[in-house]
Length: 463
Image (cartoon, rainbow, N blue to C red; front, side, top):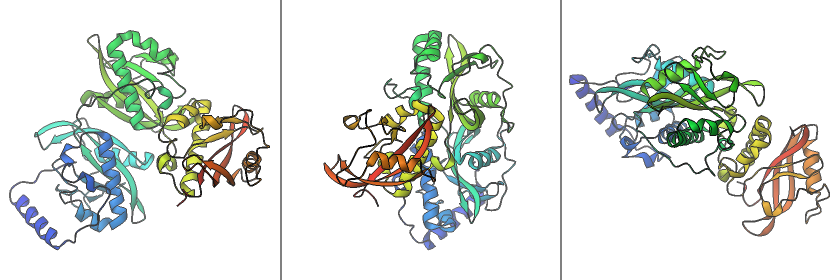
């Protein structure tokens, strides 16, 4: 949201900001310092998301009152790029550079398409922990109404849930599409699904409607819960749905989730003014046969002079797993426990298909962090280190300290708690020395068999 001030009000506000700046102490350095002086150059969703996360970190560091003052400064405010925050009932906490004051309610604010902007921001922050909102608003740089998107993030405000966000008027971007890194089995987060659909659009442009055959049958384009669908943009007629082929030839305009979100209508609304966008809703996950929170990313594409929507969906992990650090950044016992717990969650959802993510995706592999899966007879089912992989491994494996490593792992995963820590001596490939290693183990089921899922950190890596 952005409002323009003119005349005396602008002069008074400028004087007030100058006086406040002279009296306000210099704020502590924050993770967002790198944005200073180039906010107006921000043009990607990932940059916007990072900016909002950094602002939330600044709130945690200096508190709401100081942060609200800081966010009115040049480091955080540049033209149409600014931060705002609100409670989940639409009460403004701050919106520097606009005429919205703390305590004002913008709950009924709607754009020209009728989108209740703040209500949608609150819903996505509340139900999904964070996400993107798409609407139309005046671009103060051009004076014209243009598509706009904001990223919002839920955070705590004095014991109550609230959200912080920022918005931008997007610009087109392009990416490369190597098959070894862009494929359905590696779709895990928002950046993955955007790249996946963008690359599918490139494939479609090169090959025309012949590409639909590939989308239906090529493992690059369809893997478990990751698949493409392709609808006529005007009629919402399903031309392709690789995950639910029984829907092909049907009118999808009436699809609605249990909360009343009109899924296809929302996609169509966004694509009328944006080239692409996200829709957030609830949907049955065919992998678990349970209702889950789902995100669909859609793009407008032109084929043979006719407009279509090309899209793919993503079942989002639990809110707890949304906060999982990248594998390379894991260095505490608490982070390692979450890493294994989220790995089990993914394994139970995708089965063997999760192994491609565990082996190649930066969320799951990096530094010395990796997941392993062993069977009820201690054999390796999945192990990242090829040079140590031995499917015939037994429960008799002994480390240099005399520990029955595989048996200890199995005993922990089948214990009454079903999870816990196992310590043993193992070769650290980084130092090429034997070190004590602590692995967190959780018992699960894969293809009807009890399995042990775990990951470890060397003593020298723990903080």
